[in-house]
Image (cartoon, rainbow, N blue to C red; front, side, top):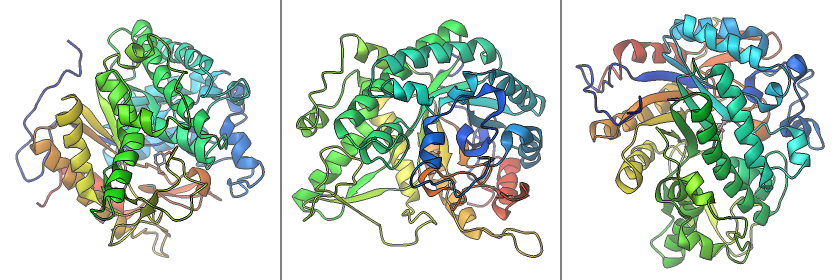
Length: 461
Ligand code: IFM
């Protein structure tokens, strides 16, 4: 039996407590925090090209230091230990591993274990080696096979110590923002290519799951999907149908092949004028449906959608959906302009169990950006973030008490970092980073989270 077989462990006593072995975590990704782009013989990635090229989004980050974590990882692990984290989700940079970068992750994993923190590794958080993009990138089938080889290489080195593997982070973003809208690297705008990329990412996941298990027998395998609730703006049939279509492309396009062995028929029909899906070959669906040990849910915001947009939206990441508009739900928004809807997290956790599979799940990312500043007394008063985290954790707890096998919660993010197309302008961290000096300052939310971890859950109902 896998170490992650479904098991319901009673919470510790007290209001809104989670199971005693709950993973209290924070998450980051390599390109967003590491810097050190020229260290370890690291190869260029598509994000190096995209963020420093025309329309650069790196905000003039000379030397691309980001949060300089490649050099400061010991200090950062000490910060995690001080916060009481019991797990840390980081990503391994494929371009760094093409050089001698495994040495760095080897040291990082040992440092984490030495601090009593479970290492949770993600193999792909969007930093595709540029050479592989030049050979076709994710729309090309060969990329899936190359990814499986890379997964084996990493697992051979770290498989004895990593406690949970995520093959991919948010394949929706990699496919539809990278190749559909072009808002992310590599910046291509071709919806047919985006659908092929989505399939090859899922195939890469399935092949890598097998490769990981071959290299590190018993290794628990998961992947992190950005999932959401999609609500129609009004009960009008066009809006209800828009919600079905977006739900298909955001959620079911990934969940159905993973847990039901095939793509949703309505999504295939909706996108038929964009692609004939001939990139799906015999055996692919079985490979994708290789059972996972757990699922990571990244949740931020709901989608509120309407059909019948008067002018087509040429910038939409969604294939065959230029007639759909996205709306904010009434109420406050985060610094990203994202609507706040904690109930959506409970809904998606219940939906996975009820419609797909009753398996161990982790909230692998949840958090909010706000325009934080360090006050003259050295404090960062980020009350809005505390409110966001508290309400989402409460929603996760509702799912847990309803029987969802919830094993952990990872705040996005440990540190302020490079927020992709937004550069350094958006701060998601529990810990403030002054990019000029690299000084770290735990925000009030970090101190609040430490209290939650000590209590084993939300102290008050
Ligand atoms: O920063 C990202 C992360 O890389 C993936 N999930 C969403 C976060 C916030 O946008």
